[in-house]
Amino acid sequence: MALKVSPEAIAIEEMLQAKSARDAEKYEHLREKAAERVLEEPSKKPAKNADWATKLEVMRETYPNAFRPWKTDDDESLKKHFLAKASIKQLSEALGRQPGSIRARLKKHYGDDYEAAR
Image 1 (cartoon, rainbow, N blue to C red):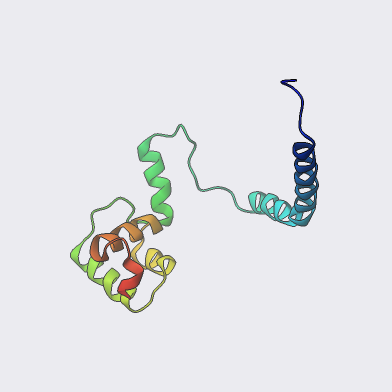
Image 2: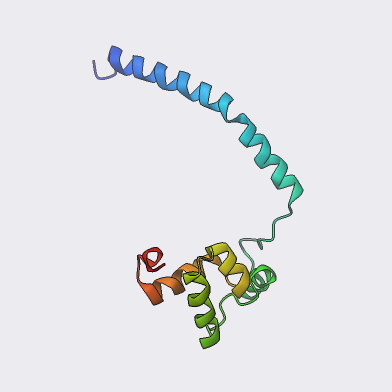
């Protein structure tokens, strides 16, 4: 009796299996795109077992100021451009910092709801 499955559970399982199969077909093009992207773009990420200096060097190829102290001029530029509606990506590129660093700095200046400061 302990291993008996209710008819409702069986019906739910069949419905979920059918939906999963439909969704797999529907989104197969995304899997193909992801596979193409992996082949096109060599990863800039260092190996997981790389030391911190190696990881930092790779990060700074894209974000030259990654993990560097913030200068007063950088903070002023960040605030000025943020209030002028620059996106996180634009700020990241302009200041040479990772998007997470930009968000953290905006939280420091404007609080958790920094988007409302615009």
